[in-house]
Image 1 (cartoon, rainbow, N blue to C red):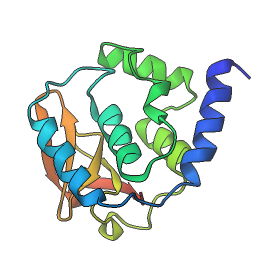
Image 2 (image 1 turned 45 degrees about the vertical axis):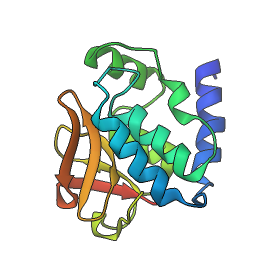
Image 3 (image 1 turned 60 degrees about the horizontal axis):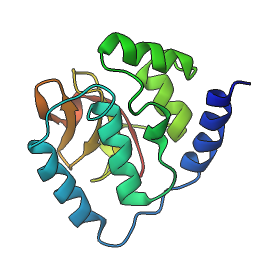
Image 4 (image 1 turned 90 degrees about the vertical axis):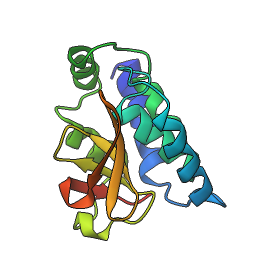
Length: 153
């Protein structure tokens, strides 16, 4: 097992077992969405996965999962390479590995839960009837029905 695989295994175990949100998480969620409006998309720094998993950590605490990939790529192709090095064939595989089994339906997602969209959004955060995430065009809002999977935070 490589160092990256070993670190990923430790982080995965910690994330899958952590689901308690911090006090006043709603305020932190609103602040993060507002701050994201003013930030430009940047592969490996402020992209769908980094935004969603950083926000998950803000809302629930736990390990810095995004440290596994933060700063290790600057393009979409680089993101795919890093994902494969970490043992994931897709964003869905990464979500299942890091977060465990998804909810039975995206309709069970609640505000603050992580989602994986069928659109160009990738990973995002449930805001209720919509999900928010970071795309190359910036903060993107999509209907929750555009999401394929959701995980409880």
